[in-house]
Length: 422
Image (cartoon, rainbow, N blue to C red):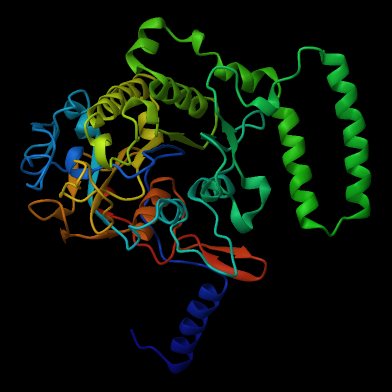
């Protein structure tokens, strides 16, 4: 075909116009429409969980603290305390070469993993949960898009997206969010009168301040809160509707949170973060300095029981292909032991896990060295990790969001782990 100068210029101009309008190249997609994000706050040791190495001695010889066992993935092993997860690992993908540069401070590393970016002096970036809320919204007006089981934390915040895309948080799993539970002396009629009065005052204020975006965002949150206080959403928290055998299979507090996460996703919530840093199990949570290492196996066993039951429960309810399950942490631990027999911090190489979501699972991606100190094959950055999550949920990782007039791509130039997509 002969191309004229006019045709070439017309084609180039069209491409430039598409780029200016925010169009991006095609991206790989999973089948997930919701995400359960299991957060191991404190920094879980990868060589003691999903990337076992030769045994150390807990003193001077570096290495894993436990023996390794085989899994459903040929030639891939995990820690001996993950015995329920091991035969289900074909539903999972291990990312063993996650890497970033923050190993000195938990808060900074947690913020990086939740937002995919380093802090900026001029902009507050949204968390991954808020981006999912913004892009997908809740499946129903009766439920929120984004829930955090744990205490409020700025790393989970909506940033420049505004309060509308923030989270509802839970500190107890049996009664629902404290702010949505009506006081015993407030009956339905009294509640209706309160809502009517507040609505009149709110609408009057907004009419006088119609250009105030912050006020409008807070008003949207207020309206949603009253919808969420209805019986449809609060009934999700009645775990007694599940069989006693299933509740027992999930295990303790963390397991009951995972069961609730399944019920929340089933009700239409898009993103549920389940925090697992229950210090009383080993005295230090996943931050296993000093003596915390001695009872780390209690945490791993709790994780194993809850996670394996969650996978099987999602399969039984036909939700696994539509739900991306993530196990994430802020950094790993070094293979060497500290003077107290525990481990310090390490961000050069550690593991995350993905399951379900229509991904090509049953594989381990990335390789660390013989003691788990460095990523030696297929390093995966935190922006890459975020891009993979978004693609699994059908969200374009290069799409621009806007902080005022400033375009901000959903990820910081992250590239999805393409091996996980068909």
